[in-house]
Length: 294
Image 1: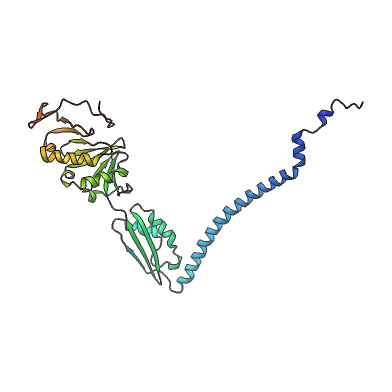
Image 2: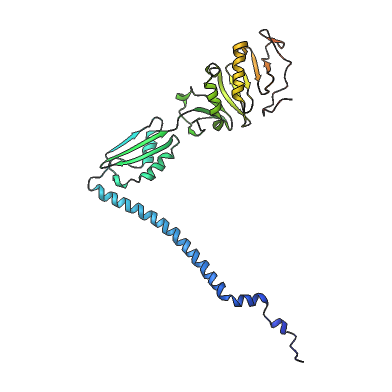
């Protein structure tokens, strides 16, 4: 019988070692390949940046060369500008009279101009031999938004377009609170369709980012239901026509419940009636979150 040394089992290579030996060439190639991928990635990034610099350098050289032939900017024509500060616009354009006209990248200039808060869309054209034409489509002022004591001008989509020099826009509707800008358009449209009611509104206050209160002249608050503002405004208009509701000394008109109207008189008013109009029992305190009262 053939006897093997006791340590012969320990001398045998394990399965993992055998696998690595058999596929050593694969491991080596993977390591080399990973290194090549890393080197190639770095080279591509560096090459891309180098290409960008090369393009900019080439454009500058080409522009200077053509400028010597008389292709220099003499006029910059701007159309559509009403509210965009001209100094900011010209800085974003990035060229001035005397610069090489072919050194201007119209795509880059357009991107810079469209980054201005007032500008919704822009076009930039070179009209050889010496004119650059900039066309603007500006955002339209829609409302003033008050949030955290700060006032900003917004467009219909709720985009902030300006936060200073707002006195000339003081006839626009005022909306208040977080979430008000992106939700204001339907309510303001509904109010504009009812000018007699709109004339009484001081501000529309967004409650819990889901419904509205209307603050009227004199301090009255009208609590509108979530998602049913138009129907509530129609109902409010009827009450005003039939009963002059909004001319009474009221503190709160709660319209959140579709089947009833909760009225809270001013503290100085008669708790039983207001100008002869019977009142229901005093309602519970109005929750600040606008949830249905119990």
